[in-house]
Amino acid sequence: MDKIPAESGSTHTPNIGAIYEITVFDTEGKVKQVVKDEAKCFVRNFLRMMRYLFRNGFVLNCNNWVLPPPLYEDIRNLAGAIVQTSGRFLTGGSNPYPFNYAGAFVADGAAGDAGKGIVMGTDATPVTNDDYKLGAIIPHGTGAGQMSYDVVAFAPMSIAGNVLTIPISRMIANNTANPITFAEIGLYTVGGASMMILRDVISPAVVINPGEATLIAYRIVLNG
Image 1 (tube, rainbow, N blue to C red):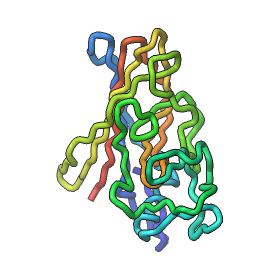
Image 2 (cartoon, rainbow, N blue to C red; image 1 turned 60 degrees about the vertical axis):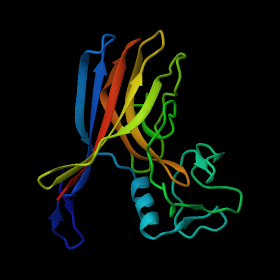
Image 3 (spheres, one colour; image 1 turned 90 degrees about the vertical axis):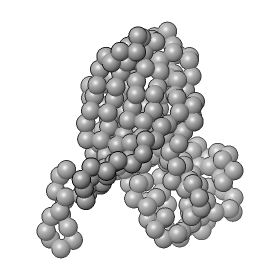
């Protein structure tokens, strides 16, 4: 990983990062293509979420901000109901949206849930720190321009020497009649709200033909 300046004026290598691997399977289940690279694109929401968790804090409605407002996509209340979509600020109501409860940093998307866990999209616009959603997410389904999202899978954390890895993966299939090209992937988590913490642009874009599927895997890596 790249060196970054430390506050003391020296430099150090960040010890947390991610790697993505995209495996495309043909209609017979054989590996057709593998794309693998370092994921350089944790976005600002990742640190915002960690800051709230570390402070055991609450995100309040727009009339009662106690911290700078984060950027969110699909704001949900604690019952899971969406109260605002594609917005940058929490609005309306008087109930806080806390992160300090069990399940506040989850990415375990169920089959068919394209708003939680690993997701894909078609927008090749370069990543910025302020990205809070994919540019053009591909929805779940079997209609034109849709992909079929399977469950998000978590393998046990692995330890090799001083490197710890958390693998997260998801199979996504093209059950439509036409090829679908994706150019971006990301990782959405859900707590008091749904938010994207990782986004990567894939170049060149990957084509999934009818009847084919792709396994998208992120590995969160900690180097000791």
